[in-house]
Image 1 (cartoon, rainbow, N blue to C red):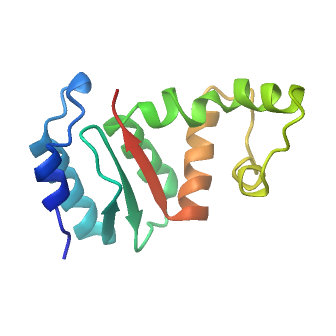
Image 2 (image 1 turned 180 degrees about the horizontal axis):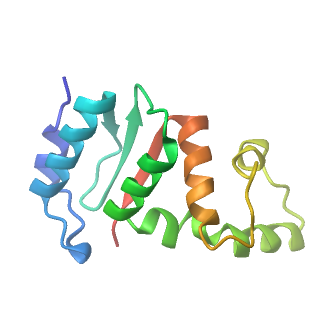
Length: 132
């Protein structure tokens, strides 16, 4: 059973996107019913959602996550096109788990961040949600 105590205690929300604590609870219960989820690392504006089961259509789930929490792509996976060249220019190696996320990414596609999110869901069965 999904434990929402930390969400309630922290009053986790995405108020800058008009997402209240109650809206978050509704979405988490929906995902728990559909996929089975666990939540962790809960704060007032973020949490990690782990999926026990994933749908056959990961793209639909990735789009749903993006609609609910745009920062996942707008401030996260959608910034990889800028972050990777900076890493390489500074001599940092791209970790193998990050390289795996880039499989099949078309950098010319404006939705490349969605592809990376989909790959991340497939690889990790989890997503870090935050609203700031």
